[in-house]
Image (tube, rainbow, N blue to C red; front, side, top):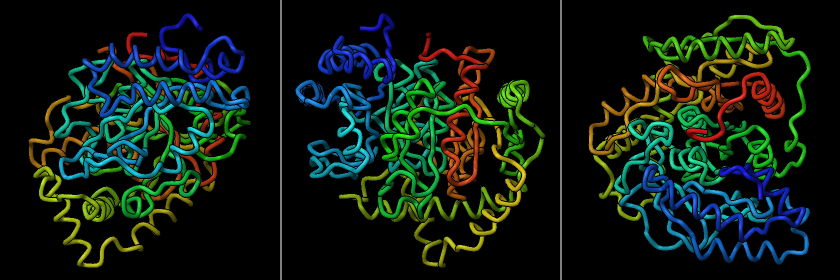
Length: 450
């Protein structure tokens, strides 16, 4: 076994292929790391101890285990997709506690590749919010337990950043992979529309929500993404040729300040890439003034209202969620969301990218907000906190374009910084290749305290 206390997915699969490690032993060690980290992070909704060991033994018995891309790799699944035999609580007391009868397609693909599902990770109610707390408790950031690991894939991010598992499944409807990745110093990729099966809730938030990986290295993220997308060519990111890069530190929303440290991380990363031979300019997309208010709010609330219809007991939702759902229903009755604003934003983005290959922004505008019971507070307080610290991600869900977060060092308090890379539809391989170059130029600590 590798000497590191938090092996990568590539290392685990490689050792299983070589016969120097069994899948069972890899899972046993992950379960030990979960036991050590869970009291701090509260990342896990379900730990599948006996079931995961049985899955691992089944991998060890497979005659093709030497060819499985994720052979024996312990993986976490976000608790908003079905895993057969386990409840899918989606962060809500109103969800059905009965075990699910089917596996989501992404779960099927991960298991077919040899991964072992060791557990399900916590989310905020209906995966709406940018901090992970719910009736099931507060999930905390392993880098600073007083801060949130982000949301809604906060449990997955905390699980990976603590070193419990090397990779985790997440999904992203308005930043829910990239925000937690930035909070926790991880690589997180939101694919473009249709690249990975979504099938999230009732309509995947009007097609904005996508499944993707969270990992500590670009190689691990690429390997997991190749499995989720069903395309092995993504597994080994190639160094990109000379790219036309644009850097912008202006937040999409009106009147949202960006901290000097997060803005500085984006500029520093962009300059490092310029030094590596890429062409760089300072340019900002012409974000419509209504993009983060009217357009985003209509998509977000009506998407949530649709998901709330799937709850077993909608009367059990949090007060802030109930208000979010009520607003969504009112807007839906008025014919929202309308296609025009989304189409106009895509046209603006197309014009911006006519002479740009990748846009670089900060992933967050401010440090992660407090880890506390936001679920016991009001709707407006949550909205304001979320909008202030995490405005950069949602425009690219609205467009349906690929985007990812990559670590960019630590701030003056020792917490992670991150940058967002955005590309045109179909540019996932380019983004991964550029992210790998960032990793070479600016190596980062893989796990909290590492």
